[in-house]
Amino acid sequence: MSLIRAVGIRKVYRSGKRSAAGYAKETLALDNVDLEIRQGEVLALVGPSGCGKSTLLDIIAGLAERDGGEVYLDGKKLEGPGLDRGVVFQGYALFPWKTVLENVAFGLESKGVAKKEREEIARRHIDLVGLTKFEDRYPHELSGGMKQRVAIARALAFDPRILLMDEPFGALDAQTRERLQLELLRIKRDTGKTILFVTHSIDEAVLLADRIAIMTSRPGTIKAIVDVRLPRDREIAEELLRSSGSFIQARDQVWNSLKVEVEKAAELEYQI
Image (tube, rainbow, N blue to C red):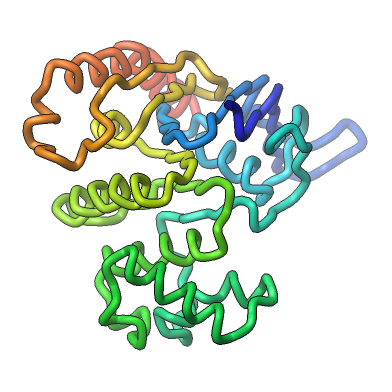
């Protein structure tokens, strides 16, 4: 069943001095993007740099305006941000003056949840991401991986319908990134949340996703959807999974579709 539908999404970036004839420069970032995100799935979004992956996520989140098309949640047209969508960015976006507990409880406070109840909910989600002993710490006292766990707990605490994750592990070292990938699989299993996950890593997309949407070079649109046919409990024997025939087949299928778009994107960058 479809939870989110993006239909005919179009986005133009305008720059330079505006005149009667229009802006000095217009760049078509997204063109006629159609995307369906199914209830309870992890959908990974991959594509070459500059293809509009983050822009599309921001439009679905209600954080960016679009120049055409519509976004629907359960058939209802979306306009602007809302607590039905939780967002996790690459840069953590934590409040440095708030403790872990206060950061996680922030969205609940915005919803008007009473202090005692929001602290109980926040503690439950802090436990979910494995930070029970750190609820009184401040962001500067945490590692990068711990900060990202706090950001995930905060996004989950107000119980959004969908979790939108924009390269959440991209700035982490390789070991921490792999550990958090497995944590996300566990959290997905425990919560059943629907997740849209933007990444540059094909291996990460194959490990985490039920389906992978491949975007073209700019202007970005959806080129293909790859079904990932791997066991649901993927955190079990991960090292065996990554070397399995099914994993390699899915990775090759994504790369074979993506590589021509990467080459096109490189050519566009060179022209600029």
